[in-house]
Structure formats: structure tokens, C-alpha cells
Image (cartoon, rainbow, N blue to C red; front, side, top):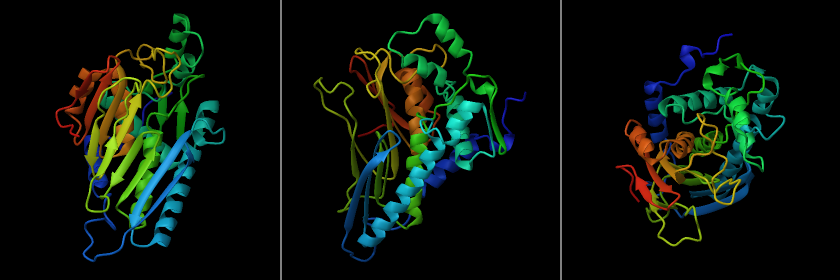
Length: 337
């Protein structure tokens, strides 16, 4: 069985730079501080359950009705993507693929996310891998998995066992499974921002479970302020606050879904070992798109801060901020609050 992808579906460096360029144009439209006419500014905020977390949207513009229409279109688009990409929805395309091992005529959004996942996998030396679902399920058990169980699950992982083309997606080995938890949410947020852009709005805040995109600026030509959560809220210490516009931010952390009180087992697993990585408590990535930031943040948790910082040097417009389990802080050279 062929277990590769057609060349024209792969995301290479040129394609990545195209993604960055498109993302840089996402702020086009009605943007605060750039309108020639002095127009009274309205703000609409909405929150609702989505993707197992809470979606929060803030949108600025001159007309409340237009804001409401744009927000509803955005929510509808994001819910539609959730119904395609969520492994937790039994009717989704991804859930059907995991059940049967084969999906014919896949949705283009699913193909796009899987190809972006492959790109992040390659750029991180395999630290990010969406085929780790069998390993994730093992770690979710109350007891620590036996080494024999880990080895069996490891045999069911690997991008080399995943075939993707425009007509069919195939999992080569029975028992394989894909989780897009580390990249799908980011892609859905990106598409929400794109929907707002299509409606003419360039000043917005779209966030879901710590993955977010901010475009334009707040009233008064002020940048957005994004706080990085302390992975151990009971510990003292100042938090990093980002002041940014037209940028994506994503954080992965051991505290988000911990299976042991000491955070030694959590929802992020090392695709090579099958166990949760031991060094970092959280990894925050800024990038041109939320999907890219989401995937790189997950990979950074696996890689540790030294390898992650080295990896980011070859990723245009991507920076990182890392906190280890001893609450020591590290950051890439271009990261700034």
C-alpha cells in the first residue's frame, strides 16, 4: 500500500511563506486607527461552548448590526469546521476515519489540516504527530501504562502509515487513530478570523481555550494585551503580558489536561517514547496563524526549551516563551512582551 502523499499536496517552505504572506493580509478591512473618518466605535462580545472549551469573540466596528451579522457567520463557520475535525463528534469526518481506517472524498479542510500537521511534523523532527491517539488514550487511564502497552500503541503511530490525497485518506494499520486536538482548534480559529475579514472587519479578538488571534487594534489605537497564564497559579511571580496586533498566540501546558496530581502524565505525549514529556509546564508560541502556533506549541512541549528555541530560528515570524516545571522562564531571541 502506498503511504505517501501526492507532491502537489505537500506544504514545503515556499508554501509556508505563502501562508505567512496571506496571514499578514488578514488585518485588511475596517481597522481601528486606520479609518480616515472619525466614526463612533461599537463593540460586540460573544462567548459560547465550542471544541470542548469556550469560544470568546470581541469585534469592533461602526455598525452594531453588521457586527452581529459578522459574528454569527463566524460562529456558524467555526461550528461547521468542528463538525468535520473533531474526533469527539461521532458524526465528524475525522471520527469516521478513525472508526473505519478509510475516508473517501474527504473535506478539503480536513486535507488542509492534515497537510499542515505533516509540515509541522517535519519541521519539528517528528515531535508533533497527529497519529498519537492510541498513546493519548493509554495515558488517559487511571493507572500508569505498562511498557508492553506503550510498545503496542507505538506500533500504531507514525505519519508514514498515513496516506492522504484529494480522493481518499487511509490509515494503513488497524487500530490507528488521529487526534487534531493540537492543531485543529487553531485552524478553526484562523477560519473564524478569515470569516470576519470577509465581512470587512480587521479589528477582532478570537480565542478558544488559549489559542487566539488578534487583528487590528483596540480603540485609541492601542495594541491588544495578552497575558500568559501561570501554569502553577498557586506560585507567586509576575506573568508575561504580550502587547501585539495581527498575530496568533497559542499555549500548550501540562495543566490543561493532567492525569496525575504532579502533572507527570497529561494529554501531550512524546511520539517517540509514548510518555508525557518531563521538562516543560507550558509553551507559548506566537506565529502568523493560530494553527501553526498551536502545532508548534504542542511540539515545543515535547522538544523542551533548548530544541524548541533552536527550531524556531528557522521559522519566519515565529517566537516562543517557555516555563519549565521549576517555573524557570526561557524565550526565543525575538520574543518580546
